[in-house]
Image 1 (cartoon, rainbow, N blue to C red):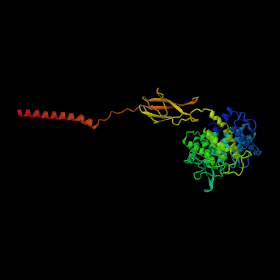
Image 2 (cartoon, one colour; image 1 turned 180 degrees about the vertical axis):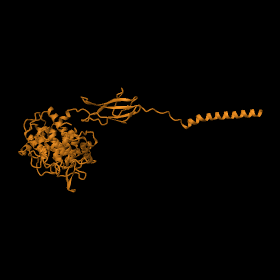
Image 3 (cartoon, rainbow, N blue to C red; image 1 turned 30 degrees about the horizontal axis):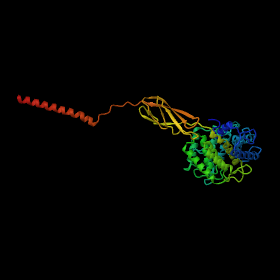
Image 4 (cartoon, rainbow, N blue to C red; image 1 turned 90 degrees about the horizontal axis):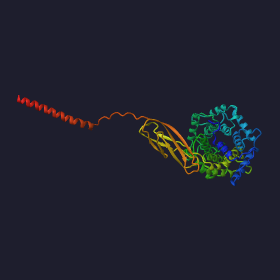
Length: 468
């Protein structure tokens, strides 16, 4: 697994290479000629970053027990300038705490969301080299995972002990995925746990007993929880055409259209915009960013009314991250993304001279472009369409290829995938047993002949006897 699997960081780095935006200082100075909208966004980013720099403590932190704030600020400052001294100072602080097994957030009394988000920001910004014992960090974080697959850390006051939660699990998986520190079995169990908390409307609950908790810093409401989980599922390779993802994004879109229930929710707006960008829902991302900009304080800071009494680096940091990614995400509309070809076939055990059904229904185009599908079946035959059926007339090994190609675009990008298929010989068929009617038709004439012969024999003997 790569050191950083974060689609957000990768998207931002690609776009900044195409459309230069960063500088050598901690101030934001775009090199392109900005539009009115980008000027407004640039001003919002600049004032947020200046607030973060001015409120950073000498050790790079934003106060004791506020590591999640330090991580958000470090990430935001790094996105503006990967050589930022302020960002480097914050990363040195949080990697030191990750390395220390005595840090308050580690087992047995800690919670997994804090080290999870710290590890995510370190990995997503390519700072893993600052860790002295990355294996120890991964092992300690995995200690929070329970047999249910979930990671614990949320204190349920009704039960008076810590329980697993979607926020703890999502943050832990986010960090471990991007750092390459989790095995497939642990990842699969964690994802299954998260999916078990999804509601019919697409949102995700905090726990199996509670929808959300306004004082939980990294997941104070259903919108922020759903956006966070959706981002993590993206880094776990969930595609935009996954039904669960579509339902989650539709939930977020509805929430944004309703202005997130009113002002005071910049954290939810920021995570929602990042989720939309990750899945190329750019119109929705634009709406979330507009909602986010409207909630900025005059001094450039942000604060979420759900769990903050005043400006803080957590809300301001994630707002600055979302605004920076959003400022360049509009260029994604200018980039045509290649489709992804996928197919399955049934039955899995194929015998010659029987039909095999193929489907490309899982193929998709990130931009939503229409696709055409062409197939080759390895025996000289080919087909077009989404759901072809093919009959193999001889046994053997065959390679099936599917090419998904854009239609109606200038570049007509395509993607090809293949799978091997073994066709078994048809079993030898025994001669069919004769039917009762066939037996009857065969026996009756023979019986009649035998009767006639017998009667003839007795008649002849009787005639001879009468003469004698």
